[in-house]
Length: 322
Image 1 (cartoon, one colour):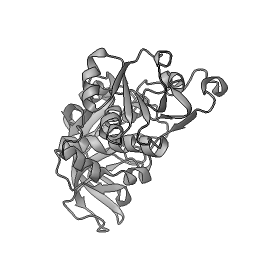
Image 2: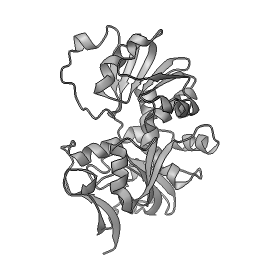
Image 3: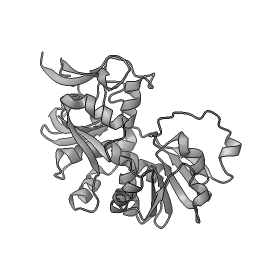
Image 4: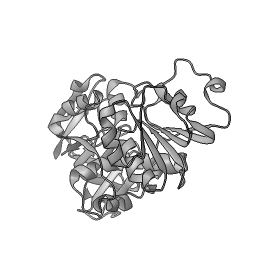
């Protein structure tokens, strides 16, 4: 039986619980695609799963909710062998083994072909990041040209993509937050029109409220973000980089202002397929926006990659080359 290198988790814990070992290479059935993985991005949800905060994920498991690579086999002929493809979500790395490996087997309905030639580190960075940014802005927030958008957590990979790659290009006025003054230049370069240094209570500092807020920090700043939008505005909670899943005390009548709308974005398989990744890849190729890659690792260094993510030291998307 052919085998592959994979990073496997057998129990919850710190980065060191990820073990690189040989595992059987999966065999695709009709309706599935076997992808030879060339690169994958790290995501915060994988960190939470590794820490034991995803009760529906059983171990042992190969983590990884996204992957980019080459079609190795496709029994149903949905994709030609050798095609460059990306996949994300749909149970990948949670219900079945994911992207932290040399191969993964996924439903054909959850795969997109990328025809635009980009480096593997870029292709590895974009599937989950761009579908999350796109879905949050246009499905949940229904962002329109000319609206004022606040990106809370602007230096996250999704924040950078939402501010520069998508919202600014769409004609919105974008304000992005950072906790560190030294990152203002990075946010300006990404396309943000305004930078707000976030001390956890920015609503009281605003001279003009926003139409929409993309909340990427999570519950630790959500109540303040709800105060940052005008009547009729929308707040979408998408991220959880604040590492806190829930409120200690939450009173909707006290926390949600009148005529302010609160929603979320989680992103399912249909959202991934609906994201115009090929169009966005072309824009990246043409230099219309830049994917902010923080650090690049090899699969053998997955423990160090997770430690870097946990300590927020990357300064952009972490990508692993396989």
